[in-house]
Image (cartoon, rainbow, N blue to C red; front, side, top):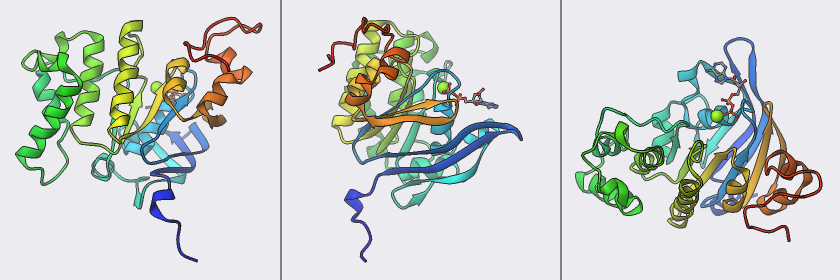
Length: 266
Ligand SMILES: Nc1ncnc2c1ncn2[C@@H]1O[C@H](COP(=O)(O)OP(=O)(O)O)[C@@H](O)[C@H]1O
Ligand SMILES: [Mg+2]
């Protein structure tokens, strides 16, 4: 039997992943999910469900937080990512935007962006310039502020910078951890637009959100994590119609009041 053609294989393949912190705390149990090439996949769940932990397990940053994969695996294409370091993930094309928009507050916007391509070897200055031009075309507000300290940007602008810094590495899969958290509704809409634009450029996105309405409107598929386990998986539009998701994550009451962020229930 020939092996599966590469185009049909999922880009990111997470299989039966168990993660613990320290000796005792089990954060993920038998979590499986795929992100196909060029797709947007949403990962929903309440605080503490394990969303960030999953992204860390993929990006190789788990160990920095004293976490460990104790079973299962993570692959991106042919590259095994579990048990590897962040540089391996970045070189494979997988880049995480950490939660809480951790920009380097004391560095300028430009310095933050230039930090984004580090870890990639053999990048010609022209390639770095090109990546920077692409990022600034996506975020014109940052272009007007390249010499300003990142710490002086608004929350929304810092989130843009954190995303822009990740894009400097020209990822094929972007791991986005709660990009809309704490932002005003207008900024949340802008973030959604940005995710669409990034994806239109061919980059797949694994989008972690508590804003389920926003995430489900962007994603093709979605998974709901509950205390470390995948509780629901499916087509994003279908999940948005299930009672559990509508009540728990879309803020609807039992009689069906509340909105689906304009996407409609039909
Ligand atoms: N560095 C850490 N050390 C110990 N426990 C942690 C650490 N990071 C997260 N946890 C725990 O792991 C569980 C999942 O956390 P997390 O992945 O941050 O959830 P989410 O991103 O969905 O809010 C929680 O119980 C949390 O307290
Ligand atoms: Mg989190």
